[in-house]
Image 1 (spheres, rainbow, N blue to C red):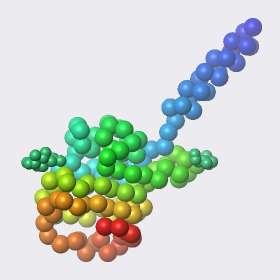
Image 2 (image 1 turned 90 degrees about the horizontal axis):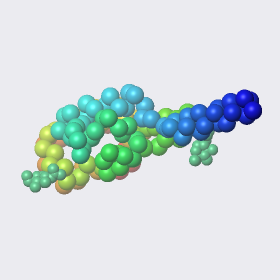
Image 3 (image 1 turned 180 degrees about the vertical axis):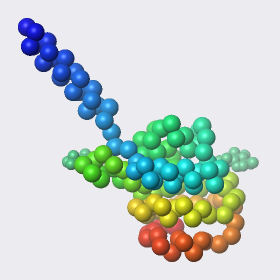
Image 4 (image 1 turned 30 degrees about the horizontal axis):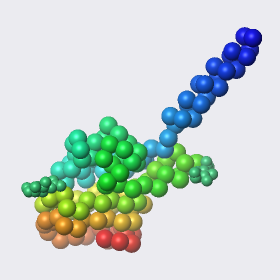
Length: 129
Ligand SMILES: *[C@@H]1O[C@H](CO)[C@@H](O)[C@H](O)[C@H]1NC(C)=O
Ligand SMILES: *[C@@H]1O[C@H](CO)[C@@H](O)[C@H](O)[C@H]1NC(C)=O
């Protein structure tokens, strides 16, 4: 009886563990996103809320950020798309976008961007801009 109880208890613990375990964005990219968000004035509630993981598709992130979470046995995510059109962004473009090596699509349409595309961006391999 005791063993059975222990077995059932372990099973509950195990299922909770596997349920709560999810993939998170690479910490380097979280840092880069914070820097980008600060520069573009996008950090805050209802916008980029770093209380939630940017790849969680929750808390508003699902509107802005898309990730590939298949890295390291589905535990690590990398940002692949950033969609920030019509956000009234009127700053110049942060060079920190180059710190997102897996970024493929960046949608900045319908903003009021100033300046030119930073030369550092030449290092990026964006397939869509
Ligand atoms: C990762 O997730 C995909 C889709 O859910 C699955 O097919 C694959 O087997 C998983 N890979 C590992 C290593 O867990
Ligand atoms: C952009 O600015 C306009 C006018 O100030 C405002 O009505 C609109 O809600 C803003 N949009 C966003 C996404 O902040």
